[in-house]
Length: 435
Image 1 (tube, one colour):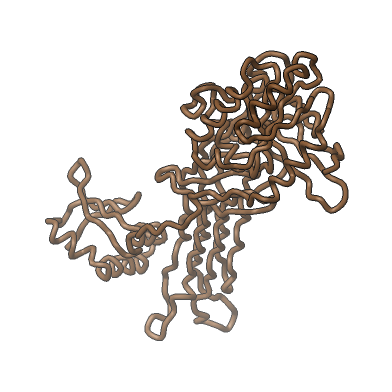
Image 2: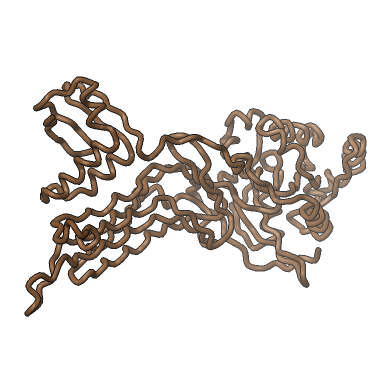
């Protein structure tokens, strides 16, 4: 691979956040209208109330212009607008615009209460509907029948979905650069791309993962490289923030294992990093690695090179001698890394495998007691129906009572011992039981 040092993302910066929680709430549907046609010479125009519009969804969308979740430190609540109410002459209310939340490539979305993976967003422009807007309520024109020609009832808009989500960032890179602290990983990334990570001659200079792009001439595909901060003993347990960094290695298709040529025992450093990879996730240690011994431009390393090479070859490993600072043998290194990437398909998350989880039927409900002795009725269908009822219209209230009877809520309350005058809570509504 012939390198063309092209533009690449800048260093991520001092603030790096790769896990966070956000609250998403979709918009409520618009209310249906109660209206009757009023026109000269048409004394009985009939009901013409229109339906409400749909509430806005909350949509997560991938943008290549973000590479961290740090923006979510300042804003964690995302609420979409409600749909517009219906109007006269059967006019349907306008749907609300979706609330779009931008996330970086590599964002994994989980249900915060169950930790179930809901989406794995990797490609620019990819979207995931995190919360669906409620449908618009039906206007009174929808309830007209041959027996009920002038209904004075309609539906309120359906509440939108709401929940807490966990976001986790795993950098999407073709090649991960791993090694012990101060091996020269950031210098190598800067030499291969135009990324500008912080570089200094002391351990743990790199506190955040950095990304860069090495472009090739011709039809070869550009390769994205990730500089993973140095891994030390105990990294799989989170020592030195190892757990936060190792998760990014899972995305890579191949690894450049950079060895510090000045280390007292380069082979021991190599074994330590691979042990931490295997302890964190056995599949990480199976990734194809291109082993490169850095700082070959230094006389001390050049004198030891034959000894170092022999030690690695004894383990059936063919190391490359490179200098990230002087850019020696980097073309050979990237050619080997490019071949390793071609042999390895992109990693998929085990959590992406669909898991069947039976959910309660929409018409199921439960009857219980509040601490104050009042009754509590819970259930998806019954709570939604209560939220969509126009309580100020007697016909709408009677319709809700018929629904209670049809679902069996009335019988369940009687069996539980409900008496006239008892208070019954359904969602945020407080009702008085009359048998």
